[in-house]
Amino acid sequence: MEKTRSLYSCWIALAFAFGAGEPSHGAQEAIVTSIRDLVTRVNSSKPGDVITIKSGRYRDSNSHELHGMGQKGKPITVRGKGKVEFETDSPLRLRGRYTRFEGITFSGLRRRAILEINGENIRVTRCSFIESDPPADKRSYTYWVVIKGRKNRVDHCLFEGKNNGGAMIVFFGFSKDNPGDHLIDYNHFNDRKEGPHNGYETIKVGNSGMSHLEGRVTIENNLFEDCDGEIEIISLKTSRVVVRHNTILNCRGTITMRQCMGTEITDNYFLSDHKKDTGGIRIIGPHQTVRRNYFSGLSRHEVVTLRIGNFRFELGKLYEYEGKYSAFPRTPRGGVLNYGQVTEATIEDNFFESRPEQRCIAHNSGYKKGASNAFLNESTSLRRNIFYCPDKRSSSPFIQKAPGGVLREANHPKHTGDIVYTTATFPVPEGVERLPPRVAVKFILQTKNREYKIYRSVDLPDAGPQSPPLRAADVGPDGPESR
Image (tube, one colour):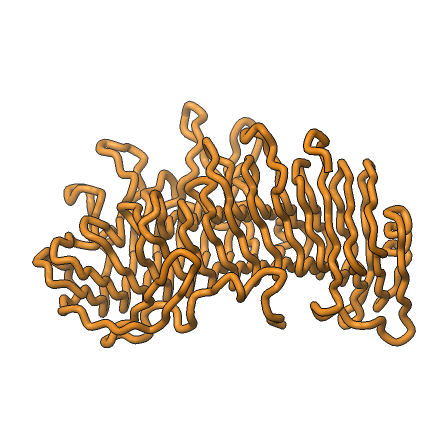
């Protein structure tokens, strides 16, 4: 493919080994040899039909919409036989319902959106999105996959090498009547290049105009490796999202509950070999849960931060300003207040392995002296967490960024059953027990560069994930079938 052309190529590999069934009873199998024929076949297909693309190279500069209307248990399947290459200047739009696309590799990804999914129960599986010909200008902006509609799934895919602005996957289209219910699972997100400013996320769920809505997106069992785009690896800007059983390996940044509430971040691994700016979780907004995660080898000074707010966030509430409505209030001068107060956050059953001077939990992060619109953290609960501080030079894993003179009783976090393993002599809060280190190796993750030992607590064996961290062999197009 010529490097100077603004094209994207998709390679559709042989997908029979990836679970694509034969046509169901009464359905048909068709073989297509052109893009026009593919569009015609998909848009006239019946439930259970299988459409196979013959090996070859296909070029087209037009935008195409594939509108398959399958049924539950009888999806329409699009698959390739041999090696099939598509080259086009325009995005591929997937519409309809119960349609399965598999074994596709997109490269040379320069368009605003490469793949647009806007239907119901559309599945994209065993695909690869690889930036083999990166844009010369890192400030350019593209999304690789845009997801709208309802109950769509992207699984067992590889996303690799993105070097310009825009998320690899972005979710839009949420409304009061459409919470999404999408699933992102068993994917490998790799080598997301560092950007010069905001807008270089790996996954972005919603935007500021959707934060008052329920997204109900689940991001689970994915491997994120060297995703260094910006501070927000996963940016959550719609509510009721679940992020669980993922492995975040050597990624510069954090999972950020940016503009949302009722989010659950559970059973994830945050691992690094002290790579610069590797971090954990940023908590913003009410009713957030951080449970059974494991943090080790991270370089950011604060691992889990509870940010100070500048307004009280309420799900579904909108504010009027100059005839327009927004999820965020304004200051008298028109400035946007978009950091929701942290209230009733739950941090429980996590395992922190800290380095000297590192703060595992930072309360009221971002506090500025004299701020008139400061909404301090309220009613934070920490329960049964392990803070493993093996270095005798370690300082307290907790820090309160707001001064004592502005704190009320509700602003102080409540500890219940937390344990600090240390031989250092720093003071610990009420509700925290200090013990000499009592840990044992639970799992070992071997990567191409090093070995990671995952510890368990002898006293609280349920702290941290109960399953091992993910490897590259567990996810992506070559990973084992999950369901």
